[in-house]
Length: 432
Image 1: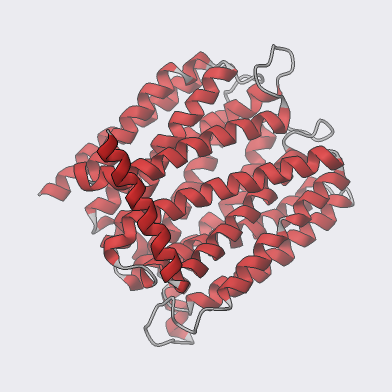
Image 2: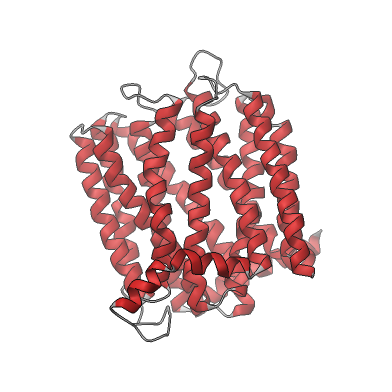
């Protein structure tokens, strides 16, 4: 046990050492962390203004519609944007995407502060979050340009999960601002506007990279060639995933977890909004923040353990183990539908889901060629969003108003089981 802890400590020290010695990695980490801190603030403040505001309509169907407006449009264009990440200077993409996102966040804050209807608010919000996804996909695709291949798994594990913790800190900052200023339009508007600070820091960090340092190194093309490359993004990314069985396994695991995560997110929101029952957690946005914090803690544990699991049991077995753990948690802790059990379930599912996600990131960065990597990461974002939103939309049609829907929870467990079967079947291609 002491030896394992020592190995983990040395891995984190090596990553810290690499960050100090590699200005490129340090700057790319700054872009990523600033983006995720701003995203955490923006989405939490917006959620507080819409999902937990008693003056606005927030029935299950309305919640599902809000998530769909925020995420689905980017899911449609995401793979095509991935073609641009493999064609345009990623340094320029990260710079100008941060600038655009900051402007969209400020515009959203103005509309929120003036009491504009949800429709206009969500239209601006979907654009801001779409650009945020673009930034994160670009940062992931650029990572192999500043880190040696042998360090990718450990470095990506630390950066990805630390980024999730940073996003949680951003969410906590938004909750604190709203708690201080009030949950009315003015208070939430100021919290949303403050999220633009992440975009400003990210743009400044991206501007310090040299042209083409983040790749791709292919000559730039213009005109019809670029148009054809964008139009072929979805097909090319999908083929790249299918031709790499290890990445296909990761996509199955990631998609499965996001489906069940969507179901559980809707249940958690409804349980926390139900004020008729005794509450072990704070109600509303504060209680949801506690649940998000529990999920982030599980992700942090995954960041510590995953770099040591992958070399010892392999990527496929890491994903299989994560799905098995998720099944057990879903049909035991989550199935009780009490706030305390949901909290512990969020912790363990955060661990399982992040282990699967980190394993998938490693597979994509190692197995996918540089000129296709941006498309594959954008495709992964699409799987994230479509699976999550589709699950919430379907669940909203059958979930109880107070979230007490045991059948829906067990359906989530069945989805985990189907995902496990799919991974086992696809793993045969890896060993063939």
